[in-house]
Length: 128
Image (tube, rainbow, N blue to C red; front, top):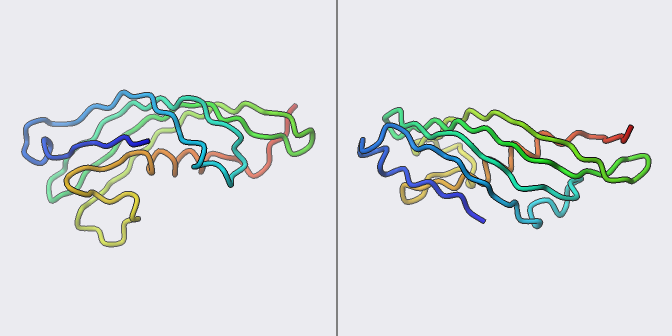
């Protein structure tokens, strides 16, 4: 499962931005050891903008539905997720996480998407 974006056209000024409009499926191995029971298809819209000096801005809207487990009844609870992401990534940044690195002028957006989804998971879920 990859959502690789080729950044070379941006760097060569062939395009001003790269638009993203995809639906991806998160592999269940990502959420094996989490409180997430299932993740529906993830809709991603956004763009990647080049700011020079090998710095890229990634603007995304991520929508999906998580299935979590109620901590009281153990029933499934559906939780809609709608996240706006604004990240800056630079090839010069040595402190950037390994998953978010630009390799061969491409970046895989799945780790960025996953990091933002997992941050939305509440500590406790109670079905009402």
